[in-house]
View (cartoon, one colour):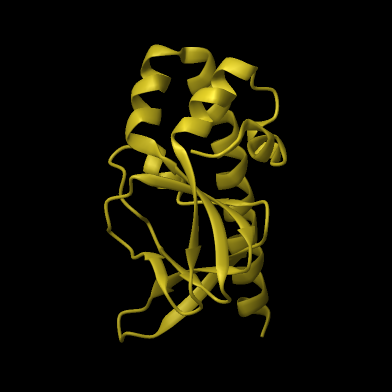
Length: 150
């Protein structure tokens, strides 16, 4: 469990009332990951949504011959592992700590159940996730354009 004050620092939780913040604080915990460690790999079942508090995370994909490429990077305050809230709850890429990282990890098992019951919370979370996905797609599009221009 973390404090609601900690959650309020991050735009992902903006607009949520105290009751919903208290619930989210109960399903959240702070965690540390060493540089070079993976949070998850492509295809893993995800039960946590992460907000990076400190450090840098690379979102990566592995090419057919085993070469790993960076699709995008996550900076402090940003969300990753959005697939933990979107069926079938499987990672569509890998996430690797580039530097030592501090994260907020939200347990998505009770969060998914609560979103099914509380559609206002579900809508607010999904609206935020849609923005995360939009930004990730925009980033990958820019990387693709840069690669094609070379």
